[in-house]
Length: 398
Ligand code: DHB
Image (cartoon, rainbow, N blue to C red; front, side, top):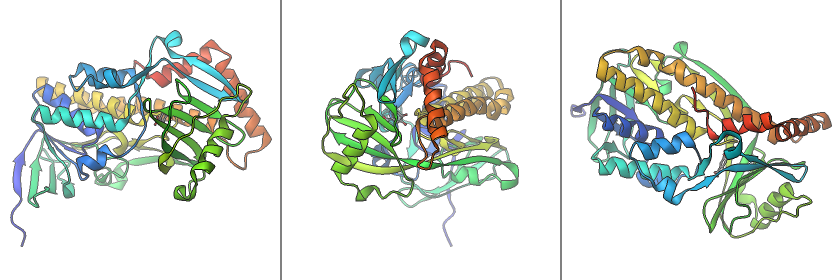
């Protein structure tokens, strides 16, 4: 028989040591609220997972003002706008002029590196590479997380609250009985083919391009490494594509009378990213709360995933802080509804950007022309551009 588990007592047990889990852990620690994070992946595996690279101003402020790190400011790039490109012509959306805000290009894995370093610096209890994690007694006053730590010891965490920040295939979400949660879900008939390349920047800001051949996104990382994506079939075999074929495909999606030419270089990573939109409702079951991808997933167009996760964390932290400082559970009771308001706005924005910019391979001429009409109605109106700018940089309310 297994030895009895080692029992550890904490206030908030957090499943998932990605950006959402670590950010919550950091904020709780700044308020003196004891917490433990368990994560099944290794620090190295998370650090080497490439995700989106755009942070809303609110996410940047959260990292800097809460004392995580200023590296997003010193090492990241402030972007005051993007280009929407269609019919081979670029139209700049000037965020700063339209809504007085900006975004920062700073890769998600660097956000993770900063958060993990801050938790180490502040003696946070973050356990990577754990196995066999399970959550139990969620509707009691002592919900628990059981896991096997990296030394092979069975541990049982006794908590006041458990937070599921364990990503889109969340074990915590699945621990909520199916009859007590509703899943809202759509799939898309396309995916992104993403690359990382060693090349100079092809453009100073991001270009979101609608073309007769499908969508392309020209993004950056730094002086020498660039990130680009193009719409592909979800079943495409990324490894089968030669570098030349990838570059030719990207290039024909940005071709236009201005002669925009992508700067080519060796490609050192190529992968398919599948799309889906998903929301779990509610984001709570007893004393379990879901945050980030565990509760909802957006397609990548517009880079809302991480920003939305951090927005959940802000609401959840304030609710937990209020509970521990006043004894009131009012904010905790409102967590799901409050967080889901922003989630649905971001779902709408991500869906809108996706449908406006991508082209189904079997699209009729009506469908293609209608999307161009929509793009034109956005870029030719100050209100249209401001709507996009406000959503892209991040709503300051709700
Ligand atoms: C990036 C990813 C996105 O999904 C997006 O909308 C913008 C940028 C990126 O990885 O750089």
